[in-house]
Amino acid sequence: MTFRQYLVLAGVAIFAVTGDCLVSIGMKHAGSVSLHDLPGMLLVVFRPEVALGVLFLMAFFACYMAALSWADLTYVMPTTSVSFILLTLVAKFVLHENVSLARWMGVVLISIGVGVVTQGPALTHPSEAREPEERESECVGAGATARMQS
Amino acid sequence: MNQAYAWGAVAAIVSTSTAGDVLVSRAMKQVGNVSELRRRSGLATVIATVTRNPNFLLGVSAMAAAFYAMLFGLSWADVSLVVPASTSLTFVTNAVAAKIFLHERVDQRRWLAALAVAGGVALLAL
Figure 1 (cartoon, each protein chain N blue to C red):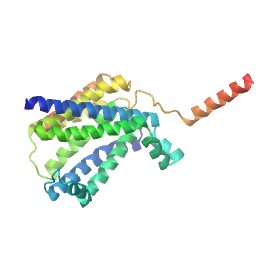
Figure 2: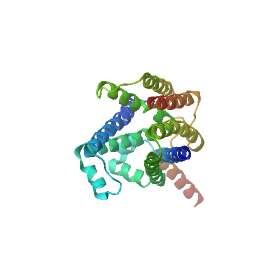
Figure 3: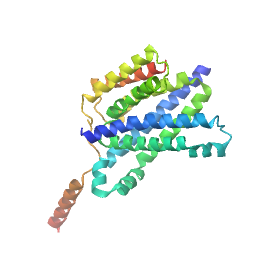
Figure 4: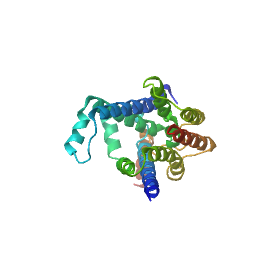
């Protein structure tokens, strides 16, 4: 794992939390939106907080896909659950919400899960994508076989 | 009856969400390391390769289905049951599905991590 790859994993967690918070703030400011009010539902996306939140959520999904291209799903999922810890810390220290003992226990359990999984390898099953060199060598091999046959 | 609807919604969310994660993961393994691909061929190629992958399209559709299942679930049952139950169970079902469909080596360490995170997420909702 390189430093850049750790940054991508951190991006998954940070962008998810920021996006969720911004969309939540935007929807609270927008008030109640009815499922029957289709124009209202579409226009709500243009509220600055919601639009910014959607951008962060797109960044989250891009980082999530990038992480899955070089790491196992069973590595990425627990590792990026750091976002739940971040959300609890934001709730406590930024929003000054009351965080119960059970929730702190939850934070401890998630931290253990993240700590345990990051001790192991990120990838246990080789990528199905073939490197260009492999394809080239295959083509060279096929060409040589064809020449021998002719 | 309401409980049956609530757990039915949880089952629908968990199964579609797991299918989405597994399909997107398979798609990205087929695409390969995106950083290397971007360095070699550029960002446009990465986007074209990913969005043309059938597993990616199926995975995103499954994720959209999970989102709608969540919306329906929330209209039938309490948010305090549907969200933590579906989120925490998804960690466990993902581990099972990754072992079966993606052939990942899910050893004791990864089981422990999945169960600890699932338990932690459930506790966060209390």
